[in-house]
Amino acid sequence: MSGLLGAAEIREIAARIGVNPTKKLGQNFVVDANTCRRIVKSADVLDTDIALEIGPGLGSLTLALLEVANEVIVVEIDERLAAELPNTVARHEFAAERLTVVTQDAMVVDNLPVAPTVLVANLPYNISVPVLLRFMEKFPTLRSGVVMVQSEVADRLVALPGSKNYGSPSVKATWWADMSSAGTVGRSIFWPVPNVDSSLVRFVRHEPAGDEALRLKTFAVIDAAFAQRRKMLRGALSELFGGSTAASEAITRAGVDPTSRGEALLLPEFIKIASQISL
Ligand code: SAM
Image (cartoon, rainbow, N blue to C red; front, side, top):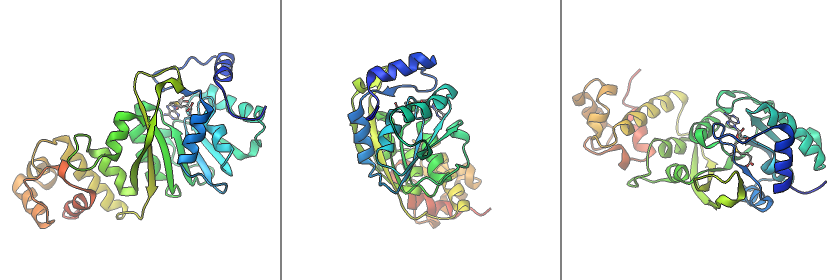
């Protein structure tokens, strides 16, 4: 059988392998082939790419990726779904050796058998931000990607200073990549239909903003600034710098106003402040 998965086949596979979609694992499966092709297209996947998919589920997006990419590597926590995926791929007449299945929690994956070049995923919504940041950090061969997330999360990932959505995920993501919106996705293309809206977010990796030591310091400053986002920086960062006077001096040395708030700063300013921390 060629082509992609349709709604009837998705339900048939789930019933056969005894999968009742659970909220705990964010299991909302895409049942619309056109949406899967649209997602793959928006990710600019090339025929030379090794595409990485986190949470392939029943394989809707996986098959759409196999139509274009050279290889697809998937990380799936649910053993029943991971075990069935090669059968689905074979039934749809894709070569088995183009798919690699890693049956693991994506939040603990440190190594993959092949180096992925592009990330395309309908992420499990409860871990979408940490899993995205983790994969951008751990797999520098990922040059770009498109992920589907809850719309509120998408708004946070692409937010700019001054917006109420701007926060720690918005700044941290820009350490690795340029983030942008890539459209919305209707609820009716999922089974089961979720009670939240979904959106696509694109990232394109840029040169790293600094080494790992500087990243860790910068992320500590970002976390402290947004943990108390209504506080001025000199107060929010006082613990990190050993008192508000020391914090105020360090922030001033970094060329930033100590009475400003984290929500007004871009990554380069957080980096300048972090550079004042001596370890
Ligand atoms: N890609 C499929 C689709 O679009 O139809 C399924 C997407 S569904 C939103 C999320 C998938 O992630 C599920 O298959 C779920 O079992 C899997 N998942 C949930 N938590 C995970 C984790 N920590 N690591 C890897 N996969 C996970």
